Image (cartoon, rainbow, N blue to C red; front, top):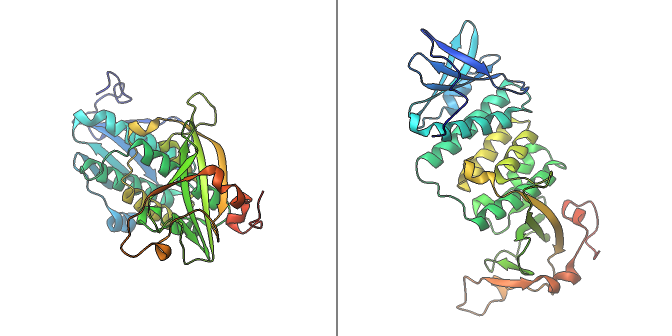
Length: 324
């Protein structure tokens, strides 16, 4: 537990609870609080009646009470920390939740975002979720970079639905008749990209692209983002409650939870490379493997991909797929 926390200067009340508003402007007011037992609270004020939605998507988490209360005509989502030993983790959860609510359009979306956070937290606290490896952090970050690009061109539900990586699809994104496999490279990594199966570079779609992001760990850069930060950025771009819920399900499938460990490293996308996968592309694919061979993983040299480079906008159907 940290020596100091945001709850330390909130007095314990004789009745109900004492609160302090969270700093920063949010459409949905948020508060730090303490109740008569001294328990740490996080409170979100909601406009309107959200009881039906809460009952439908309620979350039960060991160590955290989750309650929708109606008091003097005002509904409030109240999170109560039951185990003081988890106060640092609880504060991390509340702070990431606050960040994601900064650009929430209304109370309905705010409640959806809050319940989505809690579902991920439940997965993490239950022990089913393991910490992502450094390679998995980079991979998820790269996929979210592409998802943000897609959100700039498609409506939120459609963009989120197209993200197939968490569902163990052969390609990370499928939309229209286009499939995109996303890869990440560290800034210091050698110039090869790892293809993990014989299915990744073969698709039933008419158009297949390989999108490669080189990520440099530059914590002092003003444009650097951590995994937690880019998750928040995607959430802020979602103005649809169903899209928020779908995004949450996919993060849970990826075993992601907004824990402090993912506040580092901070990445800058230092290079983006897009290749059209077509005849002659250097690849091993299931339809051409000798009989009896399977589960193939291999490295492709980036220099061998030069003839297949294309304009990055070609992925979205906004430019042709010619070299350049």
